[in-house]
Image 1 (cartoon, helix red, strand yellow):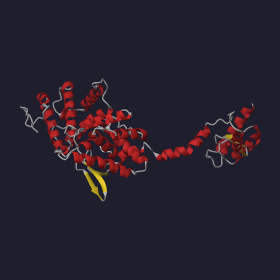
Image 2 (cartoon, helix red, strand yellow):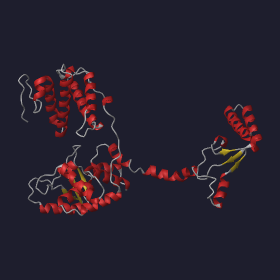
Image 3 (cartoon, rainbow, N blue to C red):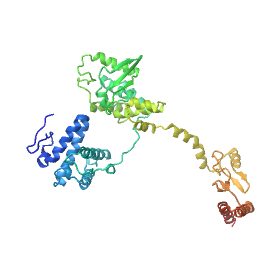
Image 4 (cartoon, rainbow, N blue to C red):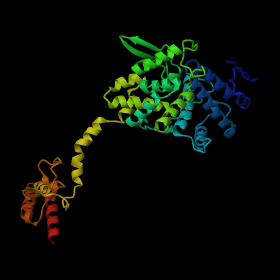
Length: 417
């Protein structure tokens, strides 16, 4: 990379930082030094995003706190001021920044301070000024997968697609679960036959890991056809009709176009990844295998798809749904049949000092003390028995039972007038 140099500092200044360097050379020098360090180990997108965030923070300091000439001058008040500025910022549509955008800005800034403090830089603040509580909470929405009917229509539209580039890109995304960025980096010779089965080598992607995924016969056919018709492709990658390498924006447009033709609305490439994972888990694929297929490092990420179709919850709910419905049944329903009347009479099981009205569908929650159950009913006929039960409990130092029977006696006496 070619750097421009400021007159009053020795370290190189990155393109785009000249204006900040003119007003606050120490801020620019420390930032560019940091960016040069992370450029050695981090992905270009991460470096670019960090560059953008740190530039925004420096510009805020210059505008709102011109007395700050270096990062060692940064105090907590400056961080709080920057948070408020971010919260007040609006997009081109007049909308506030999303929580994830705020989290990225503050997170990258926090990492910058954490590292410079840890590295012992002269321009680092005395201690870290940003804390975990500054970050907006991470939402955990369910993955937005297509339902089975919509997925079937989408795949039919993809198969009927006349543009071969769109067809192969969309079907690869849908049948492998790969990310759009991984598709753009996919080598044309990524297909291999191992132990009689066809596999696709997905290149190093978001998590810096490559992996092999099994290939559907349909994809083997499409990729063979592609290779035969593009033998003179000099890039070694899948290319557009114009001969240029794929980019994720073009891939997103292909997916949206197929989604519109299928009549399923707006579909984005990552939604196909969610759909494949959901379909696999719904049909019994182990979470570990799904994680390997998608290239997840953490099984917690894969668990999000299990939340969409939790069979344990569904099975347990089905088991108790009839019993729950019985709670809302009207025992005096005029439309009930004579058979249902007989069942209702059976529900009124006689007890020594009352009767039980619990529906048969419901399990009994009390093994012995029925008088404490909400389904227990009694009346004036059982008053002498209830009084004997109360007196017995009082004589044997059982205050809880004494209170229970006294409450039942009081209710019977009040009902009798």
